[in-house]
Image (cartoon, rainbow, N blue to C red; front, side, top):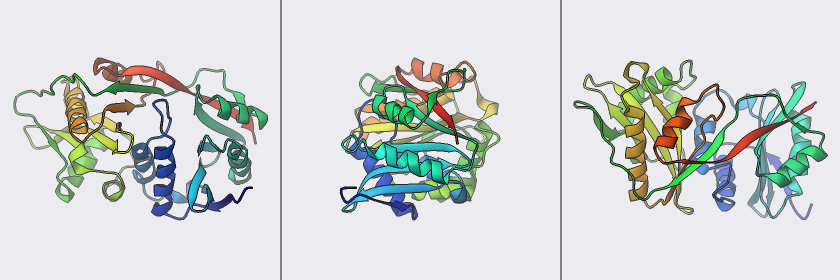
Length: 293
């Protein structure tokens, strides 16, 4: 098709190509950020066999990609100049998926992608289910980040902090599959910066809360992913402080906007409320399309 070919994913260099497409097609209402893709791919180890992934390219330029989570969930990105590739990705998905039901999650505003899904027999899920909301704010007028006496705001210092950084994440998101090996992979991934991996250190030396923010320098936008607090330190305002500290560092690095995508349904309301107090405004939300395989 016009010299466009499909090939399977072949390691971290291909993730960079997927990120480049996300960066090239970024808009304020975009679903994918280069940082979120890095976090999603590297936060776990041993998942590659469960993630059939393919890229559609022409002359070395990535124009679309599909990323399946077995048995039957697809994430995809299609260059707006080549909307016909959505049909190619959806056809490939049906071939490689193994589940009895196929699911694709998109933003409600992705109308052309929604039309492609309907053409392929998908229907929008109407029953209540978890969804994400796209939130954003500019980085002017940020409040100062403050922590209780004895607590310290700082960045991750490198290898010496890996065990504690993993421990606070696993406590915040228990049960979690993040381990020291996978976090080292995150730290080695583009565009991770240790100075944007912000933590709150407690008086006893433990890490109590954190906010990892990823900078897209070209578009001047950073994404918060992930944010968490150790259960022993909740209701102390530490996640808020870590986020504000991260947003200040993000602004110093040249960003003008920050985005985050928390759950928006009633089943997990706290993060969305937190980001609201930080000045993030609610934008588009995700919706699921499903069909029998």
